[in-house]
Length: 257
Image 1: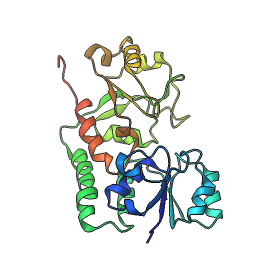
Image 2: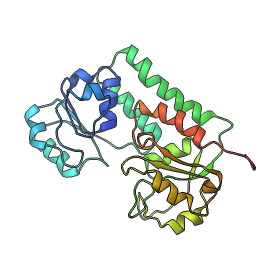
Image 3: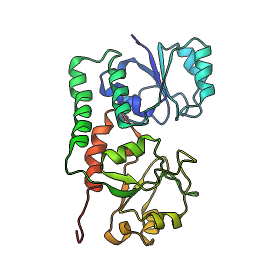
Image 4: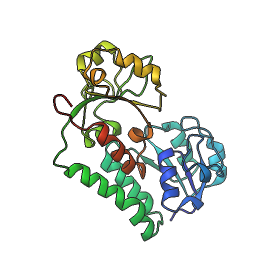
C-alpha cells in the first residue's frame, strides 16, 4: 500500500484528496490546483511536462502517479530507472476515468469515502447512458487556437461529449488525435453547439464573438458557451459535475426552440 505518493496528474491529485488520501501526497505539480487550500501546503515539483525528476527521486515515494498524455515518457523512464514505482494512467473514455478513480480508492480509501466519492460518479455515468431522452446534437469543442485545434474520437473529451449528448463534428479526422481545423471547416460542419473551455487554452468572450460571426446553427441560436475546461479534461470526482453541467448545454432542441 502506497504511503508516500507524488502525483503528476492534476485530476488524480484532486481525487486523492477527495478520497481522504491527501495526507499521503508529498509532492505535486504546479498545475495541481484543486482542492486549493489542501494543495497549497504540498511541495510543487515542476510542471507536468517538466517535473523536477531529481526532487521526486529525493523524496523516495512509494508511488508516482503519471499520465501517458500529460507527462513525458523520458521523465517516467528516469523515475523507473531510479527504482520508483510509476503508475501511468491513460483514460480515453469516461468509463476508464471512473475505473481509474476506483483504482486510486484501492490505495486505502475508506468504505465511507468510496460511497461518497466513487459511487456517485459511477451512478451519474450509468444514468447518463440509460437516459431514454438522450439525442445527439452536433458540437464543436476546440482546445486551442492559432491554430484552431479540436478533439478527435480517440480522446477522453470526445467520449464525454458523446455521453452528454454531443456528436463531435471533428470526431473522424483520423490523422491526429487533436485535429487542426480552419474556421471554414467549422462553418461546413454546422455545429448546433460550441463549447469553449478555459484550459488548456483560455478561450474568452472575444473568441466566442469570433465564432458567433460564423454562419453556423450555434451562432443563430446563441448556443456558444464559455465553459470550465476541467469539465472536458479532468477525470475522477469531477466527472459527476461535468455530466451535470454539460447535459443541459447539449440538450436537443426541437425546431423553433
